[in-house]
Image 1 (cartoon, rainbow, N blue to C red):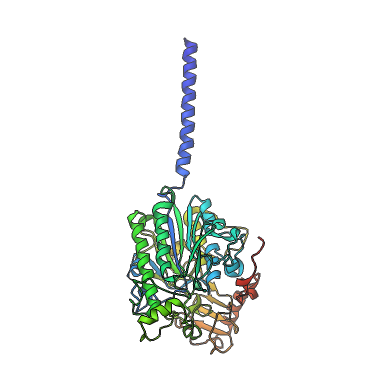
Image 2: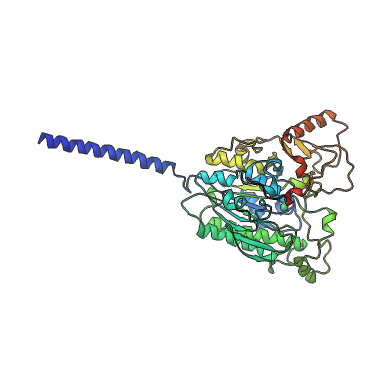
Length: 475
Ligand SMILES: [Ca+2]
């Protein structure tokens, strides 16, 4: 009996130890599993060529944008936020946290590491819907969204310059359309379908929704055409606002609002230079719109407003890359607040790293900085005191521009004298009074910083659109 008793006791003890072991093991698994409850979701709404002042909350007096105005009230509005000068470079910067001189824009190599790759490693599910534009607009699998960190993709690999887009679902081409007026609602439908049906509701997610509008061949759907006071461009802005509201309603309905960081911004400034606004009037969307609006004045398809800033898309002046930005995360990001701190799309990757808990790559230069304290309202100035524009440099309130600052063949300010320029952005955000001769030491300081940031980069290739036409690399 004692033996049996002892055996039973030993078995009992063994069982207890096994239970304890499994308890610890499963407890560890449970506490370490990334769940939708303890990690925030991220939704990035990225428009194309939308001007700084196209939304009511950023100063538009013609376009009615109640949903984005409301989003701004529920979150923080950033007024010194920078994307990049043009589409592809802007997307490579957002995805990698690296200036386009390193991430290479339209020609972004597969060796670049995107935030989606890092977030997926941290236990997230990832989706990209809309314009990709960093695989030379070609179906090069190793540089398409699935290979660059996104579990799910629906969208167009390039822009809509030719008036037609081809759709890819993951790596497969599934159709095309020349109805540009259908794109805002189509992408929104796909985003909603992802939220409702495609994701695992037990896991956190990142959704990168990258609209084709308001780029080049703009058009609105029938129910929005001719409805705004801002011409066809205003119709598109207002439809975008409505559709964004539809997406935000679904976030509410699915009870995701409290734990989702929503980021709205755009990829570059508007095409507002006369060189563009007087042209491109043969696009189908415009011709259709013009039939019913024959007397409308200023009826260009390019009509975005850069508001207080000089010039627009492609330019090293503020209108080129200073864009509207709103971030909402209830209880985390202060509501109804405006921040003028310098902040940029390249900062999003390191900021996600801090919030979610992954490491930024250490084998390459990451230009972005962690802006968690800024977006949470714990720091007024944030972690960045400068911004690099390839041929211009901002530090604090000062901005320096080289004598020759054309890049990507886009920048167009034909009246300007080719001399060095220096502006005090605090008192002169429109860059009208050149102070270079008054503050030569400031010119020198910023020029040295500009040269230092770009010293290892192939800047020449970014000065023209040659980059866009380059053959894919072998990475
Ligand atoms: Ca763009």
